[in-house]
Image 1 (cartoon, rainbow over the protein chains, first blue to last red):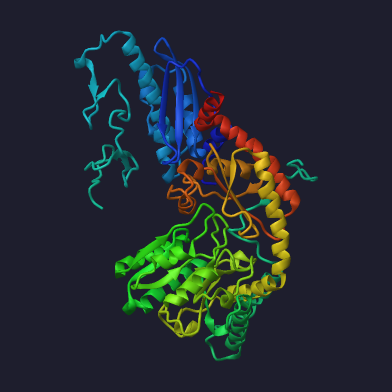
Image 2: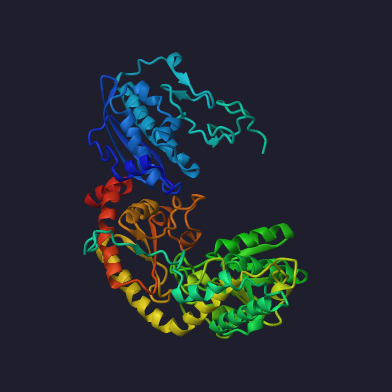
Length: 186
Length: 402
């Protein structure tokens, strides 16, 4: 079997499948051309994820990733949820086949996109009290980001796997941020 | 129909015979002596070697008979892929002085497409002839693609992904008219439909034993007498100097026996499997809505039924069916190691989202109507479950309510 028992368990019994009709935030990533598509719906109460539902079009890994992301994030603060990275997702699933690691990015991305969506709606409601100076910027694209995402939602930067430690790095980066390996050599 | 057999075990239904057929017990019996007692090398002059040589040549005659060839026109290879590599590279390089262009169909097997790609390093280029929505190559489109530099045409006899049987005889007529040799990859076809190299009029043809109840690791290339081809493996004088290396005697003997049985039982197997295939093709869309047959309905391999099931992905269906004891395959991007959707489905104009829902069922002579009915019982709940999870299906339902 190409998948771990944990992946198969989540694939067979995915948690939190569905749609939240009056969601506070909706995040959608991927498209059928790339293979997978995920939609996350969230309800936020006191800055915490009170409910999460998802729908996924995709393979076993994509479904298991969505399920475990919803499980990890449930009840967490928005800041904590934004810290959920693809590494954490893959680790929690006991690992994913190398060619399915991108699925673990999608899960976190979809959740983060839902939180972003929620924050944007909130910001609009609060009649632009946010000052430009308070905004964070993506270290890669300089684009505005509202929190501490693992992946920038402004530039949607493309990642590549470090051949030494497997960490995901920005494409074209010279050194791996995790192990320091030289990424330029072919 | 339930999943439980009388002894409480789950029914096992293997419907991925395009990947592998079971070894016929009679074939195994003919192979065993060449593992145990007769280990002789066919190139040796002593009795043990000569005995192996006799068995090797008997197998060659049996394989030749199955496709209507002369014994001397059969070269043994290690697989269908090797036969395809041998044909494309060997025939193109042999005619290198005449030109550097190949014409291939867009639905060729990777072993053909990648052989052509590898020839690019030697200055060759290739044109891909597209197919229609049923997967047919238009013979006139092949004619139009042939240039004066064209040294080889290769069109698959039947695609393992959609099962459509191509008009290869007609394409062969055109190739003869313009004087370009034609190879056909008949790996999925030989042993399952009547294949005669003279009736087809091809110059070269690939086949593999594991498609007709023979062993894996055993294939052959037919090359018509007088057609030039460069050796594939340099070395000794095995296979007339075309493919050096000590012969895989047991596997070749097995292929010979499998070819003999395939010849004898071809029409019986074909009739039987066509009935079951039609049962599947007729009934699956009645059980699952928005399931579309891929490939032509009648002019297809008798043991092949392939579908695209909308709004869900093939690997997820495959894994769920596996849990119910049903083995199938899929051409979805997620199922492939390279994460690319089947080039065959895309060439037929099927869009990426629908191609993701690919399922391929391939039968064997032991498949029963109960097996098909069991699949038809376990598939709909799998589809329902995955569709309930699918954002595309939710969107479809919302839009159809408007």
